[in-house]
Image 1 (cartoon, rainbow, N blue to C red):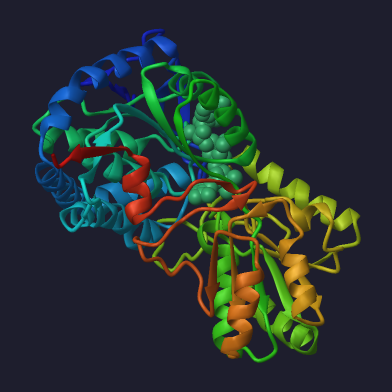
Image 2 (cartoon, rainbow, N blue to C red):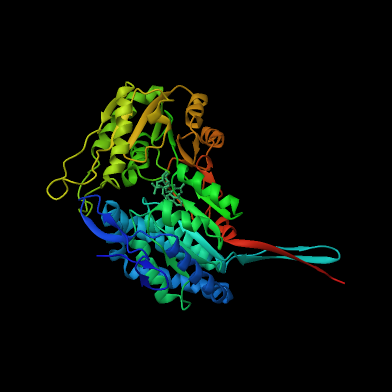
Length: 478
Ligand code: NAD
């Protein structure tokens, strides 16, 4: 099967070059996608620019109705979307069905509701009145990673569209399918043609061409920190608006007074959901020394009970990694840890999943102890099912270890002492902190990181502001 670009309609890439799309659970080629170049991007931008004047002239409420219609269509096809996501990523179908696709639906409904209740400013002076307008920017570029493909693309698409922009999107070359399905849905329900285009291909080619295009006025990028640095360098020289959601190396800080059972399962979930391939994953587990041995033993038991297997089997908790290359990268970190005297508490091996899955990118969930807190596996983003554990003696030390990384995306604190929870949370150098929970998401709150984890915030009004230009108009009252 060939998945084409969506540039007003389904089209082949200009150069007729294709990339294999692989199901990472089996190693089978499931489709081919365009290896698009600048000329494909140029065509998409040209069409998006042409559509901009019609789309921006719709009222905000009409655009909100389109978002609801998109949500309804995805909901009708939920099973099909979930299967496509599971096949592209190797993640459990149950996860795609209960998290990825429902969240994409929620993203469209949330931003439709948000603008229906939105307000803009009015500032009175003795002799004049100011009012503030939000105007669409124009054509915006959305570039997204492979770990939560539709979830993250819809998180950008919904606010960008509702504010009146038109879009050229590039999903990860490893997870192309649901973006294409989304393009088809938007085309069916939007009543205005050409507002959303998908150009597939490699980041350094199709992605870079979007970032470089002078008519693309804003870039919303989610991906790795190294890529984000390149995107930032190009976009800033064109004075484009830029939102960067980048990598993370997040700590789960466990105090002796935590609710023990809930914390064990919460910390395990934070480390290994989606095979540890979530930017927010708590892959550094810091445990107060007085409960360290007991907690680690319970954690080993919990992690060892996570069933790794056929993503389509309902009892599967962890699927495959995104690719064999990515597994190699993750295993390199495990080997570095072994070389540095790290003790593999569980996992560290390739599980045998059975017939048909021999060529898949399988890796058991892995816990590693006895490493230095500044060792490479403890400070670099591994982005796989590998977590390191470290003991700490007091709050000061916990905060120091947690902040001792270049990233600053999120963290979680597990304690029943509310004063300590506030105190530790506020000292963490991260954009987000959870207390006694993880990945509890309210779509209104600011989402994003500090340090090498990114620039800017997404969510609620932060996204609406990013995808619009603010204009103040001051009228003298005469
Ligand atoms: P990546 O940086 O390799 O790729 C992300 C996207 O950028 C892909 O679509 C890729 O094709 C494209 N790209 C690559 N080079 C490019 C270039 N030069 N110009 C323009 N586009 C380019 O990241 P990945 O491996 O797909 O995803 C994993 C990373 O994403 C991890 O670091 C993870 O932490 C991060 N992530 C962050 C968040 C967040 O919200 N902070 C969410 C999910 C993932």
